[in-house]
Length: 187
Ligand code: B4P
Image (cartoon, rainbow, N blue to C red; front, side):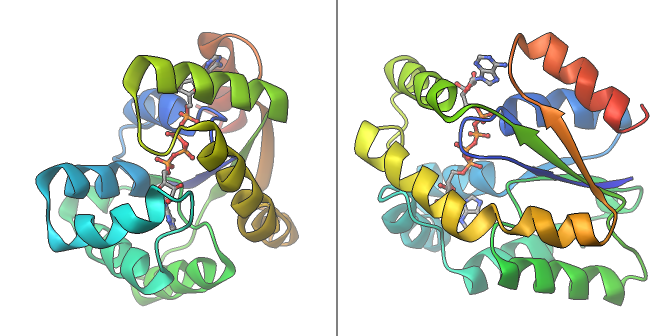
């Protein structure tokens, strides 16, 4: 199964993707996690990505697309994958389409985790206190929410037109959200 998981910052994408991917027996591919791993290792990709992430902006499409293109060629992606936080722009949707067309496959489901924006800010401020992530300061959280609304929210319409979109309520306890997600994916 090839799944795209969408939703605003703090919707619970990373939290849920780990459990759902394990249950489905497919790799969890988080572009945010790959960028953060590169930042902590000080690679050239990490140095480039950090400038954008710390400001709450998206990393440029060419950088992100090349990274995903490479990751999807790994053998563990043959049975499917769960993409967490990609695609985030219309250009990334087009690139993902072309990567999949080249391998003769398609996306099976695009899942949007829906949440109330006030709750998202509470979650991210809490994570900032617990983990000190550089992009979880209040100003940057606000900017990330704006960027999501401008550039990523419109993508749900693209997947809805293709009949692939399913919306899942991301509010409430983590386990309850997981159960709703698995049900929506027929797992
Ligand atoms: P991401 O790593 O994807 O960060 P995120 O949107 O904040 O989501 P995350 O998965 O971390 O948080 P979650 O909602 O699970 O991206 C970070 C940055 O990387 C982007 O801003 C961008 O710069 C760059 N980037 C990534 N992908 C890119 C792309 N495709 N193109 C360009 N740039 C890209 O959880 C948030 C918090 O809520 C956690 O603390 C969690 O414990 C808590 N939580 C989760 N579920 C909860 C629940 N049900 N109840 C209470 N708390 C909950």
